[in-house]
Image 1 (cartoon, rainbow, N blue to C red):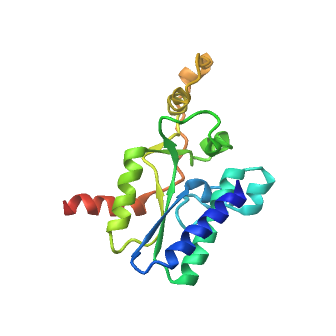
Image 2: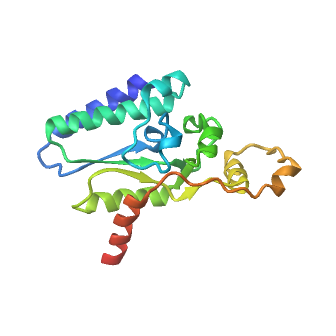
Amino acid sequence: MTEIEVRAAHNVLEACAHIDTIEKVIFTSSATAIIWGFDDKKSSSIDEKHWSDINFCRKYKLWYALSKTLAERTAWGLAMDRGIKMVSINSGLLMDDDLNIKNPYLKGAKEMYENGVLVSVDVDFLVYAHICVYEDVSSYGRYLCFNHIINTINDAINLANNFNISPLPSPPPSFEKDTKIIQQRISNKKLNKIMIKKIDDI
């Protein structure tokens, strides 16, 4: 998976470098290229400045996160080397009709939930984010993209309901009394600013 992702990123950016009419490349990456492996105690909020630790991903067999991290780093390296204006959108778990429990994004879902970084994004929101970032001439760097944070038991149950598991196991009675809210530790403020600006301009 990692080799394929990296090669694909390289080939796409290499092709873009040979086309003079391309003004900007929007590279679709993943939030998993941001959230894994840093010191939790030192980072109260996670944003686009963070990169997932490659050795951490290898150690815990987070192959999807490893692939996305290496592919995005490859894309950024080539973009800077070839003078390509590139922006990346680091998407949360995509909520589409094909979502199932085997989705590789969900590897480590329990830890993501407990760390306050389990996020998802609707297809329409992700598409609109791409449009906003592409059309805004001031867009730059990386943009975390999500419109749902899964940080309560009810959120987790609602997410599980999308996995087409039939019948879905009933949660233990203790879950109904669990009103704990996990602190959100991931921010998409950078993207929100561009999207709000787009709405104001309409």
